[in-house]
Length: 268
Picture (spheres, rainbow, N blue to C red):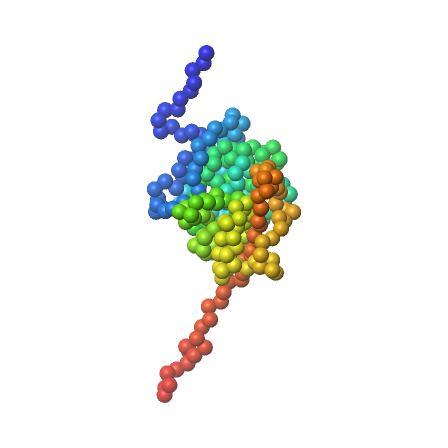
């Protein structure tokens, strides 16, 4: 019987793959909206991580500003997806829209490997996988007006009241996102947790950098371009209500100058 291989302490799990904590201690400690999950990586996922990470993966270390044209090898518009789970929706949307590049960020290693495998299987050259905190990616590694869209599908609802501060969709996050979204870009959120959906609608409606694409100011029906996930279908069968929110980044506000500031003082 073969002995089970044990990694020496300190040896990386995937030598050529994503790092365990890419940003390390370079940035301040803060309340995070995600909780890394430990789960088994299949042989297929591990193989994809080893082979494809150097080509299509990047660690969110916060140490440089990304050149998105260099990252994707073309100048097609880039959409950021925050939290992609196992990547099925990401892959299907990327396949359906080859004219758009997708930068998908998550901390779940099995999902990273699965999405890389799907991208290879389907010949998707417009997908890149980011490993780490999306806040650091937005704040430190993306240039202003560099994104054509932002997707946040089924983020952790943090249902307990004392955990609401961990929810991703907050005014501070929207301000950061707005700085990276070009005018006219779409922010698309979806959740099956109704109290969180109401909070999303409230903070997005109140934010000066976004406007609802719905004339009635409410939730949007699921657009055809967002596939229904297996998880979502199971929730609908149980009576869950899924709400989509489609908001647009408004044009940059022009700072008004005092029309009298250049006039000479009275009596001059």
